[in-house]
Image (cartoon, rainbow over all chains, first blue to last red; front, side, top):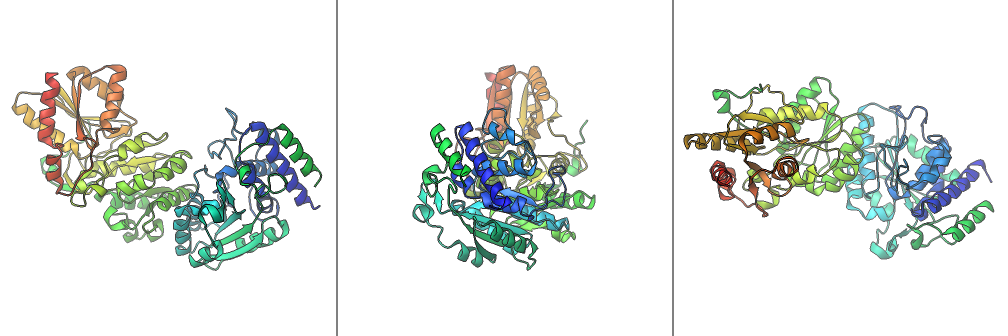
Length: 271
Length: 321
């Protein structure tokens, strides 16, 4: 197992443990995007410095699917924005780790998210702002596939292509599930690749659990300056790494009990 | 003492929205990092003037997509820009309320919600376009300040204040040309209400286009021997509690006039205040739980009983209570 794979496994354990301690939260979509976050923050893709969180030329990350806060918090803790012990305060009164990310409480959270469909617009606005500043920074944003049912995502897609935001990279965590079931059965978003391409984006697909492939593609899309925004459709497994959570919509937003937590951590330890 | 328009200036009618693009140009020329984000209404809101003045790169037209407009402004704000949003008030607040709540206000971003065409003064476009619930929507949001300018000069001042004040600010502007209340270079303040006419028998609290109606009503009342105080509640949130309570301590009763629903706007704000500190008889001029309809601005003000004549009647009722 590579160092980054070990990191990903440790992040999964942190996610399971923090949600179990909190007694509520969203494990499915947090676990599905662990490799994406690992590649972004620990694969040499994003330029960031926890000691200088306001650096105007830092790359920005915006978690459009704000309910996956546990994966963001875990990533930020591993990156050095705060101590890992604080992860265990998730969702408690007085914690900086709100149920959905609050940018007023925590460095590294660029903007508060949680209401779906807004992150791509915010990322596009930030990309416009960075261009106006002549900044070399790139904006990354992570969307859910269910989130792509929000009409605003396509308003933003149109805007980003119109303004030629080639400093914007959107990643869709295509795990195929949302609260009520399979995305294809709830309200089919159908072929997201064709949709983004039709809006004028450069479209890429990748195995969202292949860290090396993610790093290569993220670096490529970051370096791309062809006057088009970039989107990566990352095929993932919801609940990845914990067998009883994998591909189960029911694990979108609930915490494991003590027995389930023990089993999940043992399974992750064995990886 | 706040600078009022003199008699000649008061004859000049201008819309509050006319101050929008012009003020943004002044602010940009002064070196402030202002940007405007609009939704296919840059001519109507006048934000287009920013591009006309050579700041093309500071104007972002989102097309007809108000939700995106608000969040693009949010993104611009987190990269150091003072982001003003446009559109008509009905869309710029109502269509994008969740974006304003969950992104702009919850994150406490430097985004200004400054739409135009609020109220029934929109006129012939009718009820679908006459926004009468926006003050209520914006006033309920934590971190949001709410400014309702009475004329062109007050709007210019409000926009300047919005740019100078970090965080979300709502500036409500209208389509109709209205008489000048203030001198052009007036400097108003957030959190202030302004006593425009002193009186001892009754207070008329007003905002926006109703300020001029209130001043007209006070003239009529004076002829009938009633001495009305007129207060422009320019800042609805934060509310100038001291000025409002001081006026009521003197007059003992009030009429509140606004070009807005009587639910949730200025009338409600003042009712909340007086109920807590000094219960006082109040009458409310505004839309009474209904939508507007097509017509000319002043016709509608008469039809919906929101004009100076209606204020005069309300004053008589409240004094008699």
